[in-house]
Length: 88
Image 1 (cartoon, rainbow, N blue to C red):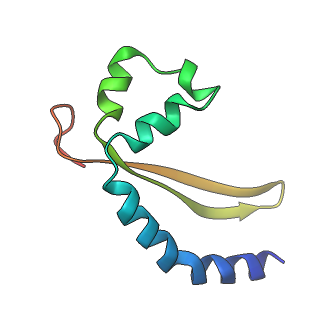
Image 2: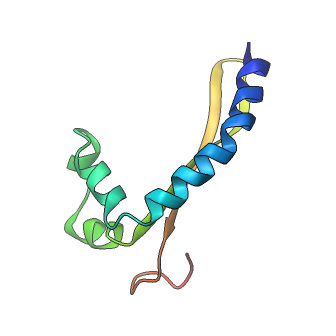
Image 3: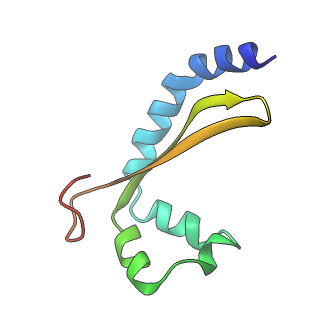
């Protein structure tokens, strides 16, 4: 079953890439997503919110699968040019 999941994930990648390009054009999208999440919204400081205004991409990628854990993944945040980071 996991092999089938990976196959379909690979087939959906072009759709996800198109979606990401659209999302990147929506100002403040990820800030609003996080602020509307019941748990996450409580974890941000005012300084975090200033930085999140510049966030334009969010990507979660499966790194590997382990016997006792279904999936191990990384989360990558991307930011447009801003006064807080010199890299994206």
